Length: 390
Image 1: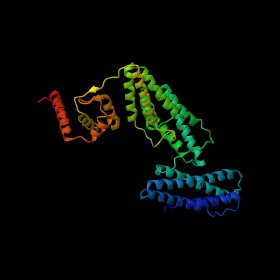
Image 2: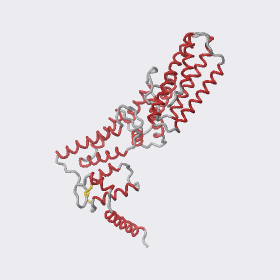
Image 3: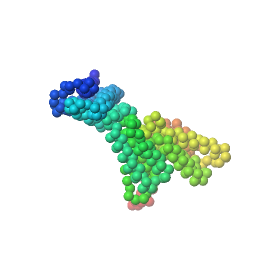
């Protein structure tokens, strides 16, 4: 059974609050001894929490427990902060030592909050509110980071609309009202966002950073509506710049790029919205369907498939060998198999189904292996003849 490690600190805070509120003679005998007692208890709590990291406690239990302790820190810290701020202006001088100890306890509670963030980041409730006492410091850090990145973006080569999209988000942070609430998620995401953009744009030359900034925004799952809209418009502009017969292949290639784009789904600008890659994949998939129908209705002939002198089984095995040797930069075998099914035909089958390709990818036989090996040996012999003659 997991213990409420915060119980003693919560009781001490309640005692201080009652004495401050009543304006009674404080029971505090020695300020330094009381602070030492608080420090000792905080050290014990950190050790107890750390021991849990090496215990067999299941993740869902740990998440519930850390969230419970996080809530106690929040409620205790907010109560102390409110009373301290009020009492500093109105209280009698004799309770100043008690206010100092209460202030010290508040600092220690914020220290426990930071300890949870550092070592239990995967277990805290990232939708939970930050303690009021920490908000001004966190907001200042967020504002400074946003202002710095906004200024940097004005001096780099970047798509104008993409720059505006990022600066709109940063501007909302800079203009945030002082009394607005903050949760862990929004604060952590903004700091990670600005740090990543700062590193991504840290070049001394005049190279165009649009592509690498776009990849960084995907990685950070920047599922902001303006970014989604910018990406759509970019695809549209690129499509219109091509000849009609080249437009659909470009869209299909772009869909493969989207599927291979790494996205950190554990973080997001808006957790209530789908990851940015999922949104764009759905949109582009529907767009491709629409364009395909449009081409068929216009009687524009789609590019022919490339015929191979291989069976489907041999093609599947060859793809597997190339994939396992990291020849393909994309690490999505399902997308690769679909691509080959759509763009190639075997010597026996004009239409290769994804299902048969997927099945044969994992279940090749010895006869198929022999045929592919002979092909590879011929290729090796040809390379030797071309570049390493004896």
